[in-house]
Image (cartoon, rainbow, N blue to C red; front, top):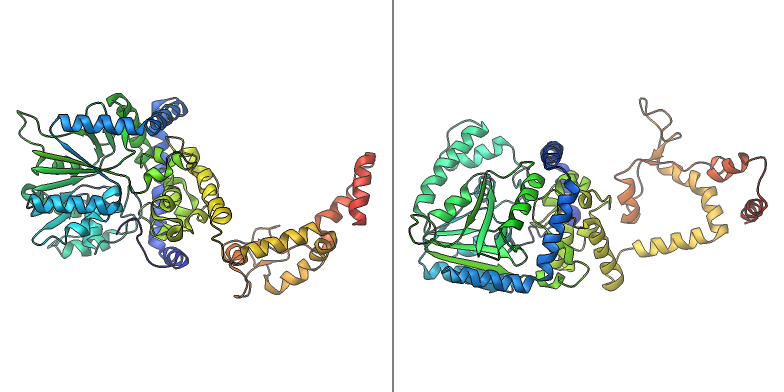
Length: 505
């Protein structure tokens, strides 16, 4: 899959997402439910904004001294008998892991949920090894795998777009003969996965946070699948983005709290695990322990105005408040990182040419910035992407610039502006719709713009197709005339002179 999840044009993806009524309803329901849970969990901590300040300071400190912490972490992993491989590109990372699996003669590979392994398209690469099978152990990721590697909808809730009947049909292919009760379906999968776990000889996990001071890996899950992935196979590979470090266990404790409360509205995830290579006297855990540290474009953000995105802890809270995500879901973005996070990160990792539309899938309302537990200024970074595309890369080849230039000329010329006020009402009347019975009284009196010709530039279509645009008022009823008729009895000389000049123009 890689970071890009679709070859379809952006507007095609959006239209398909808008047509999926179940997905949109599920996303809206999840957003509303998570708002209540998230708010309650954060309130329990007390002084939430002060905790955000602390979390931001931790993440910024790590990024500022990233080379030092990477070296400290690597040294501590190797001191415990583990190994670290630094991969600059996704190709280097997945090819190294594939070669390691071949060397270890891996037959059954088990994986826990990991965004970064999806980013490098690891699953399908490993499945090219003859005689090797692979199973995603997270329930949602398992469902996507069984459904021909369907695209995820959310980084925390990947299968929001699927209902229980769809999931039942996928499980029936595996021998499930029960009903569509989610508990029964989950119980079936538990037994199915447990058998595979016991035979697995190669385990792969992601990493929530890597502890520089002791070389341990911190994983947060709600199903326990990551614990089994680490405990049973003799070989374990951890894949992590190079920025996912904390100095010590103390900082990990802070960020685990921020992550759980922001991602799922819990005080702490069910399984909060710290692990590494098996030590003497232990009966479980990997005998061979590897950590693959991935760059894949992350270093391009260092020292730039986009550096704050490296603070992200992948909680998904920004998606849970985004009005655009609410309407198009995750698959509309065409990236494994949807929502505000994806709008900032995808062009950095995948390039502007592939994700040039994403910075415009945003209303700049700032809700994502307000909820972010590590205070990433997401909406400001999205706007900066727009500036790069327009001013630096000159990527806009549409009529948008021409339209805005014409509007600028028209509003800057008194004669043209007065002409527009005169003809706006009769001109728009050709595309207007009269108010229907039951419409809110006083709204759009005299009708609203219902449609525009297909040849009209997409900038105008984008507004009219998704908004109830009111009819412009007649010239005799516009604000200027109203203001003239409602002037105060005594007007200051300077104001009077200005009004006379405006009237003259």
